[in-house]
Amino acid sequence: MEEFLEANKFILKPDYLIVGEPTEMKFASIQKGAVKLKLKSEGVAAHSGYPELGENAIEKLLNVLEDLRRHQWPSDPNHGETTMNIGLIEGGQALNALAESASASLFFRVTNSAKELVETVKKIVGNRVEIEMLGFNEPVILTSG
Image (cartoon, rainbow, N blue to C red):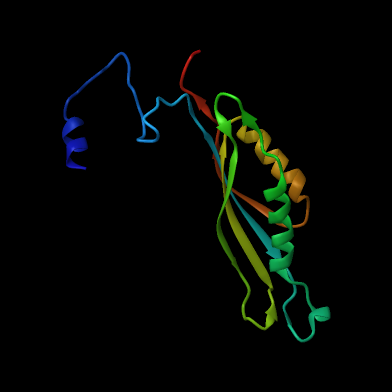
């Protein structure tokens, strides 16, 4: 970390700057966009011995997540696949109870349009669970040809 701080002491104004990561030792052609969101599901808590008295928020959430997992997300022949990661899942209050609430935090790496991806998520989800947008940014093409 210190070497980066030392480099910042030079007041450089280069005509070009190459930014890279140590992934495959290739020049990047895109900085993929990102979509971060949280899905929230509400149910009705009930003892598992009487499931007819409740509604399991976890099961509702799992149904939505499965639909999102099965969706064919956009890809680009030059920039690769749009990917979805289910990073966090939370829910329930006891092993022997239908969950009153549940949530899942998702992260998409986007090769096309982040805005269009959000609209697609909204269509797939419908009104089955709540969507909380945590943030998004569009992809940045790093090459001109």
